[in-house]
Image 1 (cartoon, each protein chain N blue to C red):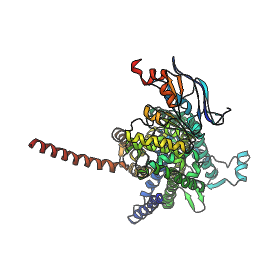
Image 2 (image 1 turned 120 degrees about the vertical axis):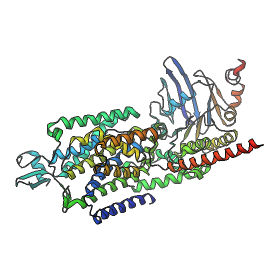
Image 3 (image 1 turned 180 degrees about the vertical axis):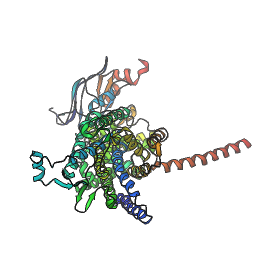
Image 4 (image 1 turned 135 degrees about the horizontal axis):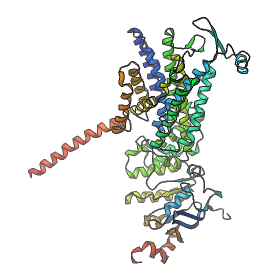
Length: 258
Length: 366
């Protein structure tokens, strides 16, 4: 990698599901500190790509490098330890746990206290608990869920659950966030809030890779956009360029006059 | 600090129960209370595995038996005629041989239960580790079947092996002198001290687990219950955590087996039966799954009643029925904080219905 400003390099990713070529030689770079979006019609392979980056699926071919380290073939928890944190389209929260415990779980990869530390409440364990709480309280406050910290997550509204998931991801102080349709199920007001939050996250120096259906959100906040269709990359560029790209307009944005 | 209050309450309760049995002249009940404590220890371990980490195990009686049979086998070997052997010399130089006189005046020599205690814990731990690595990749009822299979293997093993006494089990297990003056035995004279040994062991286990639950590792374990994707995504090595908590559960069961065997002076194959494993699962379920205190309270009550013979011939059936009813109507467990919430929402519903009917009534008048 020559360009030190590239945080993630995706090289010719392929994924077959039986005879289906779900992702077909997709390659692109993600610039450090930018918001990059992956868009495309349903079934274009966006979520499969996400799963391959985050270690939930093994690519049939190709590599993903994060900070020059090969992360394909690693397990999800190992990818997370490298600082690449994901959120889920359908929310994967521990519903029976409190908001605070869920978000503290996000801090997990920064700590090192083990079973014995926990059982004997060792100084390391207590120090880490304190540190973790100090780290997550500002995040809870920023996402307006501090008042809910003791509520069981399963009882919250969908919008608040999304906020908890985002808080949990941020608690690990990730250098890169993979957001899988973070606006799904949110109302207009919540989506506007979300857009501001994602931009703020980028301004903190983090990199964001976004899969999203909400076009106005994507066009508003993305620095760069990759368009997938039937598993292939058909366009890549700035939002203004994508909006002008005829193929994208034909295939995706104006699908019904094709 | 707040999380230690229940532990203090537990300790006070234990003392109060002991005083009550003394005052009312029902000291004989301490025997069942002591045995219940050991079963509670198994339930506490299973509560971590099943309730908190969400991994069912129908093989806990197998680990209990590993603990019990290990010590029963090792401490009943008579070394008095093995003076020349290497093991004899080794144990003798380490001061781990105990000479005792039997009822009939013969001298016997057996190895110190400290040796068998360490052995029991190590054997159970390694077994759980080696079993856990492949088996914990399974989920739900597949995991239940696999662990039950393990339990059955142990049961058939102790039932069919001569050195484990086949159907008779192993008796004449010597008492365990923990330190001079404190003896782990079922002897009448040590009843009160043994009651405290058992319950202090439970308190120690609970203290460790309460700490663990509220730690970094504990949160990760609890998150497994709701599905592993979330834990994975947050950097939790789920496979490793599951195996370790399984080992903890197994070691607790083996410790219980060890202590119970020395307390009873023997162990039989019924302790390894699947019926016993089902009991432990039923206790954790009725105790509220992810609720270590529920497991403790229900484990104490149900085992005490069972050991007092209250359930009569229906002993195992009672636990079976409890499990079936729990799974059908309250798979989340009986004692849980949410009960309060359910009651509240129930009254809310009733009140709202009244309101709705009132509104309907007003509309029909118009």
